[in-house]
Image (cartoon, rainbow, N blue to C red; front, side, top):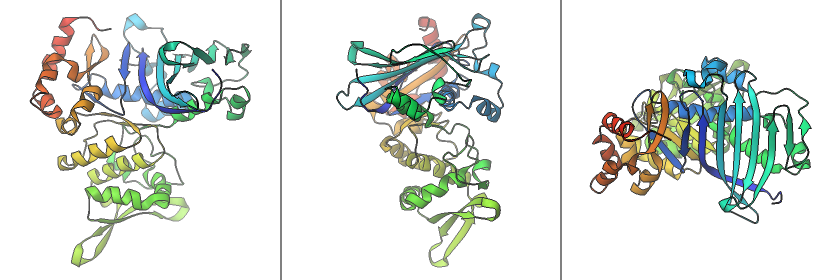
Length: 402
């Protein structure tokens, strides 16, 4: 296979071993994937695992751990049977190439908690049915090779993936521009699992490409989006809150940015509100909608329904389904599922559960009892009519997981 330009379309599936409670975890992804399950089974951990992959590509694990208040030891599955083992991952991407649209790009690696980097890594480009495999990158210990070439010593120290340090020009010169595409794609995963109303209301400084882990950079993140496409974002927001007449990011002293809303009060005129006077649900909705317009390849939302009026959920789910971004959400609210088309629900809703401390995933509507109910009920009604705890216990008693 040559080095034709590639376009990554979507993530096909992912496997994690030894990342927190993801002992041997597999998940296929759709355009919109929804995780359900009891509290404490690992739904948020799945989102964190994808964010971990993004940080590997950024080479920014130390900062990421510090923001979350974690230590490196917190990343690993902690039961005694796996102590001393590395975190292993594998991600498959659907790609388009100039001459072939049936190829898959696979990135896999083994992350050492002690070294804080991937001590083994591989990127492969595969044709359909794996009939032809081209190894674009191989890392083993302190040596690496590109497109099957000679092994070279790694002349620098790094954190995360070696791809966090290899320049685009170097990769192009060595005939592996696909690795630049992969790096950019994974770096652009956007995690909003820790969104905080308190942080969304805060002022910020400078211009930022991301909202921050909890929303602490919200005004700085919104400013370029409003400058480039204010009408589009405002129109989206007005579908949910028609009384909002305008949005603005205002600059104060020392580069401080603050968010302001103008409310249309009809014959009583218009009122300008600072972000600290806006309700939590409106700010969260704005944060979600802005992500669908900004750069981002995979959007991660934990408990997507938090703070949002149930009457608005149908519009929100439709907006996410129509987005050109791939989206992974968790929810406890049956309403979210009820607005999914039946076929989409069958493919995209996964029950997350635990066995002996290990997080597992199962297509919710492939369980015989839930699939049968779909003939009479909507997806959300099936969820509401199902005792998830009882279903989980039934699954655990039937057979051992993979």
